[in-house]
Amino acid sequence: MKVTPQSAILPEAGPFSLVCVFNLVGNKEKVIRQCQGLLETVKKLNHQHVSAGIHLAIGFGKGFWQQFELGCPEDFEEFIPLGSGDVTAPATGGDILLHIHSNRHDLNFHLLSCFLQPISSEVELLDETHGFRYLDARDLTGFIDGTENPKMQEARRQVAIIPDGEFSGGSFVMVQRFVHQLPAWHAVNVDQQEKIIGRTKIDSVELDDVPENSHVGRVDLKENGKGLKIVRHSLPYGTVSGDHGLLFIAYCAEQRNFREMLNSMYGEKDGQTDKLLDFTQAVTGGYFFVPSEAMLKQL
Ligand code: HEM
Ligand code: MG
Image (cartoon, rainbow, N blue to C red):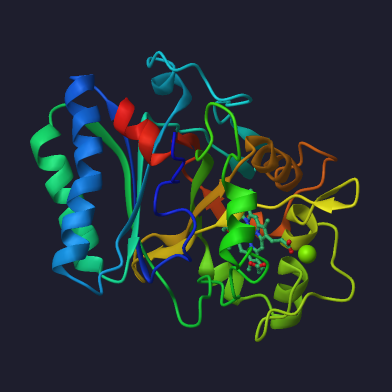
């Protein structure tokens, strides 16, 4: 079997993204056919609009995936709620995930509306978030997001794509939508903000002494001298006067890398929590499996 990963995973995030999570409430076959048809629709749109650069990944939650007779990728778990008090991550799950990124906000919108229109009574939308690249790839906190992301195609493949076996070409995805409390963040001076992130604000240089409870201190994990890596595609979203924050989405060949990072952020590892989480709150949380293109076509 040719193991082409779905197209959204390896390229850098385009300037516009769309992440949509929904549950199945009606006819499963109809929805699966629509998902498969979306691959063709993307091809057609990219052909019609040569600079659109539309990339797509379709993933499935564990409960939903188990309904196929394909078996389950090893170590595929549901998202479980994490944390306590004011620092919590809810588990909102979902059966199906669509991740689109491209150069065109309008085509992302168009693609999703074409997809949903014929199956609107078969699915229940849990979240639809349109993201945009902000300034020079900054999060709304003003910090550059993605500095330590694997850059080269081959490095990204090694981190994100299951290399062999039954599920080769597949990838695990984690999604969390964060709502930022920017007034509280802006009340903190830049020196303190840098200690909360673990890098400098202007140019994203790692601090000499990365605080243990900074974001980088929590997620830059090593095992036997080797860094745990993921491929992040997160982008800011929202409106100035309403909710806004980061739509976190990342891919990995091993789901446990996400669990280790989340346990470390949410105090499940050593009781320490990520200081960044005092300024942002996750409102969704889910894990999905993105099969190779060939496997998606076989469902
Ligand atoms: C690094 C922002 C959530 C994993 C960073 C950096 C920033 C950032 C500014 C430093 C620059 C870089 O290397 O990209 C945020 C914000 C988040 C968030 C604003 C949510 C509101 C998460 C979550 C995870 C995560 C939920 C994983 C579960 C990572 C990793 C790095 C990183 C692995 C690179 C660490 C290193 O190797 O130095 N993030 N992040 N982030 N973040 Fe996040
Ligand atoms: Mg590092």
